[in-house]
Image: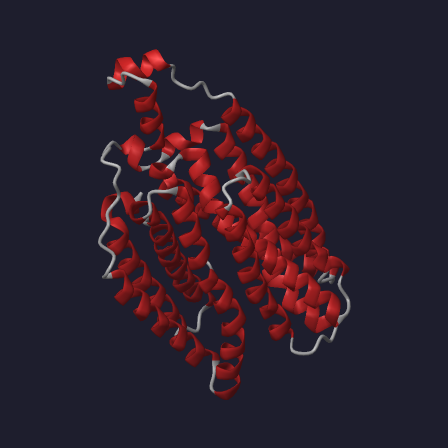
Length: 354
């Protein structure tokens, strides 16, 4: 919604400022509740930035092939960050303190602020009605409702993995668990690269790709419950990153296929909102379960249940999307001629190609 009102430039600049303030202020507070407020500030800023960065691609790249390729290359950045930042932050924390590490993170968002200044494109959707700008109408689509449920389960499964995998590896005396965890960053780059290659062929339906993403990512994420040795954790983290990379690269094309390019900002915003609610719920539930049973593997049982639901619903949703897509009624030649003044078949062909 804010993206429709302010555009990408303002959204990125405000979002990066909020992220920087969140980390900088968080390094000085000593209360848990104040720290939560700082992280809420950071989360809102991250949402503004991510939504704007992805949505503005529709203004720069009109064809799906170019847009998907650019998005896949852009998502390589988070993969490199996941691989690099744990190593860098561990070094800073050991040599200095966690407060210095957070302050270093806050300075990185200054770069995002500067880069946001150069974005000039604005949303092309001129419909200024509240119904359109808030994106509420996308909830009329059954496929998006199913997508939201899938997102909730998948995000909960993912946050359980993120919040418990390092603890589990330390309990199993895995050496340098942060480095083992960082393997998923490199693996996510491989997943994004593979999906970019597959989408460039324009022959594989995005519905099949999104099913593969859910199956690979979710099974790898909850398989931590069965890992005990170093190599098992390495493989689990690698395939988790690979599946997450596939999903991150496929999400935007899938949302565009569901709701259209003009409603992409709203779809992303609601997807991020659902993911945030899932993360909050999963952290609290998994923490209570681990504490009650005194077992760090028990939360992965919950993630196994949630991940399985996400996979099943993703398959149903993708098949439903393909069914509806195959039964869309194409306008007849008479309708083209009546509405657009098209006189012959060659004009119809050129019209469809535009």
